[in-house]
Length: 213
Image (tube, rainbow, N blue to C red):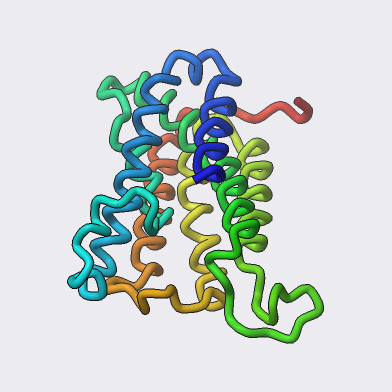
């Protein structure tokens, strides 16, 4: 929970680094809260069969989460007006990779979300340190999105989060409750499709990013 709280504040801090982001910070906070709720309920729905004997888990905020649902909460609370909606998506979605990196470092510290067995020298307990891989991928995505044209960053961040999960899913061990009812790769594919659509839809408004700063 501490890692989730840290990720929440990192996302809000990154959101407020620009005037357009500051204007939508309250909305972003609501989107993150909704995303956390969807992440928990989504996890419970994916493992509904295994949780049949423990229905209280659906309402227990200390139980599992599926981070692939978090961006949907942020995306769904966007303003309806076109210009405000674009500004919100650019700032809010662009802040998610850094927040995800922080959250995954929390997973690493807690020893959860273990990877498959390996004999590589950097293995953690004989397994791939997949939270560390994901934290590195999200940090790299955050830096890369900062160099993209303005207007493309939000969609690229969303698609990049999906792509990083696709790349690392083979290294993730089966969760304690077993494989989910829906393959996480399909959830990641939805993020990729939505992010690509959003970035391409904004193509006419792309502006070059500054070389420095």
